[in-house]
Length: 434
Ligand code: S3P
Image 1 (cartoon, rainbow, N blue to C red):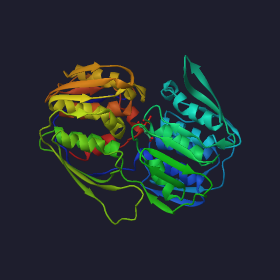
Image 2 (cartoon, protein in one colour; image 1 turned 30 degrees about the vertical axis):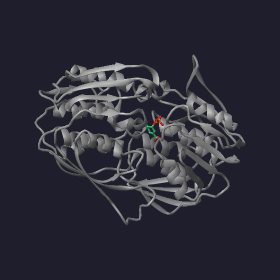
Image 3 (tube, rainbow, N blue to C red; image 1 turned 90 degrees about the vertical axis):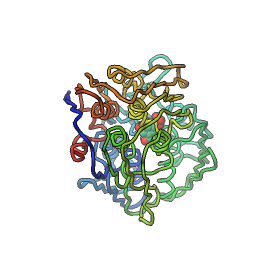
């Protein structure tokens, strides 16, 4: 545990460039490993989660080397049965995506997880992979399954699957398994989720198409490396600076080369609706064509409450904690509909954020339950400094640092070590803006 005292005499101004998007980084490693040829991944983010995927692939026999933020993957050599159980740390994306890949191998692998991931639900991915033919056993508690998980690869068959929960991780696991299946795989989404897997598979030559809310993958085509790829900056990390720049008077922050994937820009759309001054400059004509990116300039200004619909939630699911902070600094009511999935993240983020924000004087209440649970925040335009808790969750911790920097009075956060999960350089990047 490493506590952090937050003093609020800070007006952030300046430019930052963020390391690559975490979601894209996982896919870049996995799809490079499955594709013929060598891939150089540039702007690779080094944090606990990206290293979890890198280490899992290395344990499965993939040759990967790294020089600072450049990773070299020697792909298409096949996967090898690991000598011992494979540790996925606390990275949910690593575990769920790699299950899709292992479903298509002809060996058995046991995957074990860290304390926090071991408490997160896995039936959502195990069930469709079983329908495709994979043999999976997992620790059971009631009706739900949790890590450790043992997966016995099999000859798979393609399926038509309607996602019961809006999850890009589940969609991606099915699509990755579909690469090894006989016949077509089709995933139908009720609400759209991030499409990084689809974009990257296409870029590496897969036969994949999107028709409205259906993703269709035909196996059989050999994936082949495009050579070198660049991962745009992590928009989930950018979100902390966007909100910070809005709620501290006098701020101006430029975020360079951020991902602008349409399935991830919900945070920008909602903040703009709240009255935010955010200038978006897409980068055109660069070699990076499979994922859009651009510069974002944010300046402080008055915010007003808004309604975030259930259909918008997947496009900003990881940004909801910091959006809750923005809503407290806005004037008027913000309603976040269908936020129930937040309870299944690294921690129960509804609980972690409500506990902290209430201790800072926020007016928040919940209505409904399950996937229909909604959060209602009556923004007063300010928060008060307080004793805060990270709940061992990186995004709660960073959101609360943002809240504390803009609050009246000083605060202390009990632990910032968890930030290394996605953004080890967060506090240094903040200092760079002072
Ligand atoms: C992710 C998808 C989301 C998100 C997670 C990363 C991904 O999870 O919350 O941080 O990379 O596919 P779900 O698929 O569970 O919604």
